[in-house]
Length: 280
Image (cartoon, rainbow, N blue to C red; front, side, top):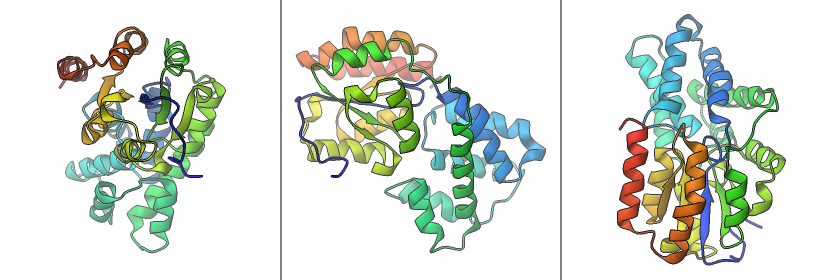
């Protein structure tokens, strides 16, 4: 059975991102795993502080927050080269892959390295594997943000919930199972299933949800863009105000979705608040 081969139980579907949206894991993963392993793998230790600041800026604190790990890696390596800190052989081809590939995941990259001698592909795969290993080694104190479980328990009674995340399947499966979020969902769609935009599109064409009855919940511009590409609604979880955002989703936005009053004016208001919160 494929990711999208399920029958909808409701006419409404709420797609939910994981890291930084449902799960309070984004900050620690980038500070302790993604960033340090990037510096280690690409030999940037001489510029550790500058590179860590760059990594966190790209992945947490600016308009590219929540970007796919390989897209974030390409941006970071491009900026390192622009600053004259280091040169990465094969970067141009790797960057092109992150922009054009249908699937950005370890399995996709593994298949590519078996056909290409590009050292940047090999280093990217090594970095990703090391990052996953480092994440596994984190203390088991991950948790959903405040109001997440309450909101999901309520929403799943009147809609189909689907995880739509660019994180790897093993991490999402473990975290969402541990904290009883998976039980509220029809399916967990991760990087192995395709991009967020692709996954939303498949939900519309497969199970057959209507755009006006589909909501993407996320904390990053990529989530907003994935929703826009498919003509569905977007609800932002504001960085630093996650618990409050989840309460508002349950009490205000979700009822509007069900009532058919989640309209363009309300969408513009939410996006304005979202962009202001990210300093856009």
